[in-house]
Length: 123
Image (cartoon, rainbow, N blue to C red; front, side):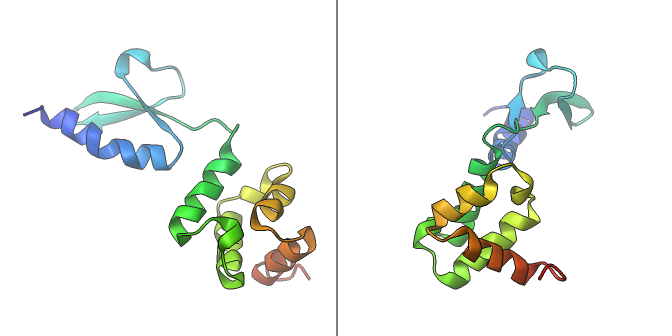
């Protein structure tokens, strides 16, 4: 049986990866990596996800959460997806509206309608 630290890291890895980050061995840590402490010592580091590819990761997470590809979602599911993406800051990324509208199979006007419905005072 492996040691408890290794078991802890194995259990932690899927959570870290779902967030788009990477679990880094202690010997490979760089400044800015976040230490993972276990039972009084640092056993690994977490490296934040790079901004490159962030929208794709957010879209994949929303598709997993809802259970369908964006293009196959119902209108209500698309509105839910837009709400989740907005909560996570996806539309702050350059070109996100175009990319999301394309992946959903809707126009930019429709996507903005969804956004206006969830953002008070943006009519």
